[in-house]
Image 1 (tube, rainbow, N blue to C red):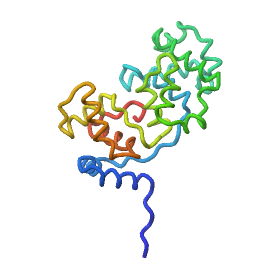
Image 2 (cartoon, rainbow, N blue to C red):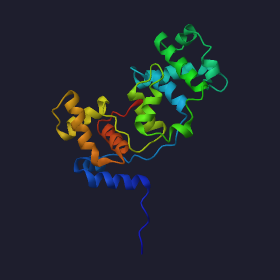
Image 3 (cartoon, rainbow, N blue to C red):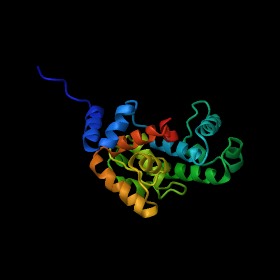
Length: 214
């Protein structure tokens, strides 16, 4: 009698557990992480900007206020968002700087630069370079979108503080700066092509998953 084929997430967990005994222990102790449905990239970018440098709870409250500016659906259509003044956005809790970033994203979307079908096919670095053309969008934000909005399987956000803390803790890393990033990348190499899932388990091990996944 043949056994049932493994699901994609089960196959990924098995690969990671066989490739790295430290990660195997983290996965064994953790809660199963399953694939997520793909999200609207434009909406995910707006929410990422709203969430920058504030708590998850505060970001959720501000996002609800932002949605009230776009009734009845609550969807911030680019053509409408571009026309909102700084004062209107500030009334929803958006700083003047973030208001500029949100409008930059809306303008990018209006030019057809956030096509999901096209962007989901890009290699990680090409995707990052494309999105970081937008004022206010950095490498970390691009990586979070790849990992959570697109659920791409092989992204490793070596610059993320949570990932660094988790790898310091579990792998006993003492390096700092560029030496730390190099060592982390070396450790993560055997995780390919499932570095995204490995990273999600590392975040989970600290109970420190980014706001995008909350």
